[in-house]
Length: 219
Length: 200
Image (cartoon, rainbow over all chains, first blue to last red; front, top):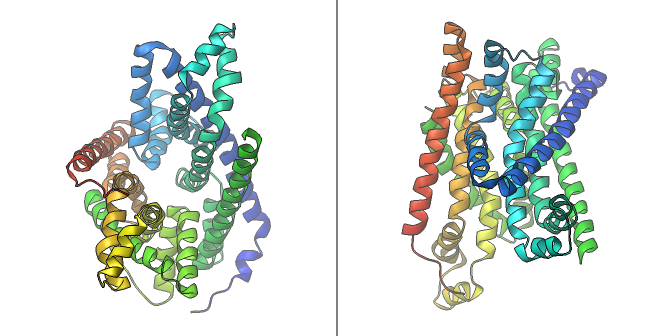
């Protein structure tokens, strides 16, 4: 069998448009996930025992079920309880909530790593709770939190491929469609795999640079 | 089917992962680079894309495979790459003194690898293995895409025929959650029951 990559590469602009959607959903989704995750971890730490228990339930459920089932539930099941979303918002919401559960655990470990004495010292010199979190605990946990946070961002990048199954027009869906139109499905998937590979290695590389910068800064 | 596919893949993947670790430590540049590229590729491409690739590429090369075979190959190769990364830490943690004493006792490098380094690395990375089992159980939902009727595909079919996606996908999620909780509990028990690590 002959492989013809030219017909796929001729569709470059479409692939780049799909890549754009992938990157947009990934970046917005990751930022939202990290923000919600941080909020959840903070509420679990300072919201009292009941809040901690209550919030641990959704975190465990989200971490114990496949992302695919979660987005199917949101996209196909949502309309039955009045949540009617277009594919892109549904995908973004699904990715943020899923990621938030993992980020909440990452930040929880971060909070645990900061010696309680430091927070107490900040209290003593008159810092408010918010100031303590922002100026003492967050900077102190940053070094520990950054590697797993980067790791999670890369995992979320790969999870965006699943959004093609709820018809989000991201890269996987776009390239598959091109492959079927051009009768070159195998070539299309090969190109797709290579683009993801490059993207993941690039973000791993950037993550390592960020980690190195931060550890220099703090030493 | 979900449990079957996941457990077979975990075991096959573990075998591959040990092989990859052996290649990476072999000192042979070709093998080292092969293992490196293999691990980077399978960790760098979404599993969904890997499955689509295997499902479409192998038949195009003249190798027809069933959905089950595709699913097993895809999941085991993917988990092999992740498990090899986990094992790396374990292999690095094997006390050098043990390896030296094995050599002194006349073990060949292969014997040292199989009887000394691998068991210790496996024991050290056991918690990571349990974690990986849970990840693969969740990742196995993706093999529904290559047409294997496992838990997720079954839920999709039921949702389509009954027009009740909400309760059906919710139940599927609960089943995954229950299996994962059981796996995690078994993992914790086993962690206690397993023999301890050699002192450094």
